[in-house]
Image: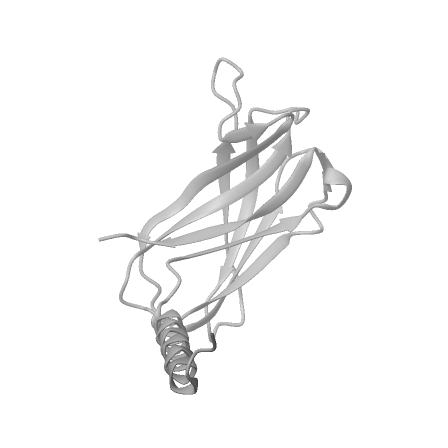
Amino acid sequence: MKKPLHNVYASLKQVLLCCSIAVFFASCMQLDHFEQTLEIKKHEWSAAAPAEVSFNITDTISPYNIFVVLRHTDAYAYKNIWLTISTRRPGDSTYQKDRFEFTLQQPDGTWLGTGLNDVWEVRTPLFSNVRFTRQGTYYIRLQQAMRDEPLLHIMNAGIRIEKVKR
């Protein structure tokens, strides 16, 4: 037995209405985090090849937490890593640089972060409760500042930015 034609149109209208509402709400929602990591070729990080990420900020009222994200193998030779981190705000032509040390291992030799087989990922806080003062595109460069050139067994380097939940 066939459905009357008006029932088919009514069902089609309901589906289209639901889809329209879903698209509307999805377009209104803002992401509460951003993460970008860049692959380090051959797992050999040269100081001359910084990992640079860029991101757009439209909300200058909300506070954010910023993390450094590193992925390495368990063959990495050190318990820490030194990075030169350079930042550039919208409208600026120069980068501001600072040097940071990040711990990758506990004193007992256990790797920090999460691991699967011989790969480890660590998200280390860089800044907490930061408010971006300008709207626009920000740039962050991560450059290894260890004595080894290249620094071996680093797979990825990047940044994660999370809006602080209130």
